[in-house]
Image (cartoon, rainbow, N blue to C red; front, side):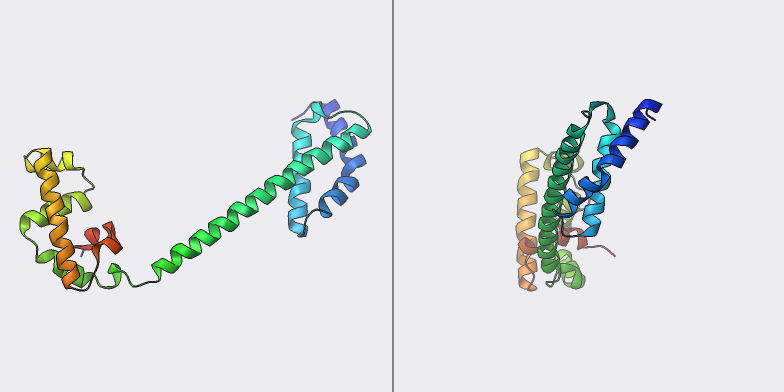
Length: 182
């Protein structure tokens, strides 16, 4: 907590400038809630920096500067929130499209039609999240050989999914992870 003289200085600044800062902020906001947030943040900043506030009428000008920056931060935050909302709506719209999750049996069947070696290499990549180098260690073969096996297995899975009317490219790793999930 601030020393007693700082507390008294802040109280004087607050009492002297509250109405003018409130008017300043209210004229620049559309929402009473936004105004209240900006006023609170302005005076919270004043409290934290009470020793930096200039004397007399310059305090009002200093508080206007703080309020101006607080309002600018609010606007930037609102823009970011708006952009996030737009992006989330777009992502949710895509999620509303038919997905593999709605037909896991077809994916399991396509996966089941692959050879055991193809299923294993795809399972190690998709379910276990292993890299080609790590899969090579598990399978006891070279990294280049593993990359070729993984590539060929993915191609065969894509062919099986296409024959079932599903598109692996559209669903990405979700299809791989669902192939034998029970």
